[in-house]
Image (cartoon, rainbow, N blue to C red):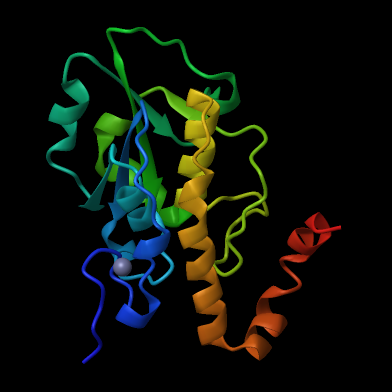
Length: 207
Ligand SMILES: [Zn+2]
């Protein structure tokens, strides 16, 4: 039987906890993770939830508690999603001391994110935020629809940095290690064949 770390859920020899910080953010982050993502070894939502004290992770598809949460007074909710009319996260949002800000992040493939929207109509009326000029992803393993698509953890780091102005880079080393572990597990040969070409832009960054 394989023993896994109760915190990060990695196999014990690969535990990432020593690399996971405990940061606090002014924005609350709620990750809605499609239930099919939960067992994926490369899912990064848990790293965000462990590393940020005001980040919450819900697993499911139709979230029964969500309408009541979104209706709570004193909160402004924003959906991180490239909807028509989305505001650029780079511009920030109007803030008021009386209103707390919550960022809702959909975790899963593009198709699963759309499924979450469909199953939770209360999300559809929320104002949305999207990226104009995100950094290139360091996510070198999962197939992403465009070169600049970020993993969930990277998307949260970038959003908080744009919206709050501080640095959340300390969340990334655990993620980098996770990627390295997966590359090791896959074997260098297969990695070269399947992924090196797709990640040529990452190599170019080093020069
Ligand atoms: Zn751990």
